[in-house]
Image (cartoon, helix red, strand yellow):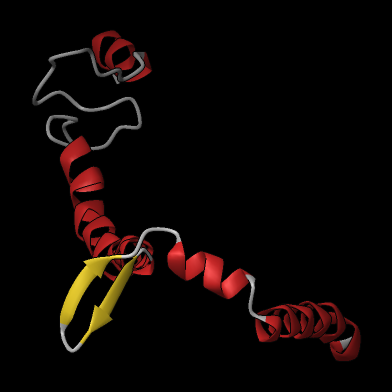
Length: 109
């Protein structure tokens, strides 16, 4: 091997800003556009996650402040929450849920 070949192989490969077509520091292909495939592939996942989890949660919060009667929706405000918090069966349901949540890990161990 010649001295020129040795000096070329001994140089570290680095990618400079705006160096399209040059190899990256890891010795891979060009770094131009490498960020889009990484983030672009996540766009679909984030949209699906938003559509199937965030949208229903936001919609449920909005619906909890509404009252529907025969297909006609009106704004109820805090009326639904006031009615639920004064219902004795709601307190029983919360107590049962907390009891089940506390006992489930103990019984499964």
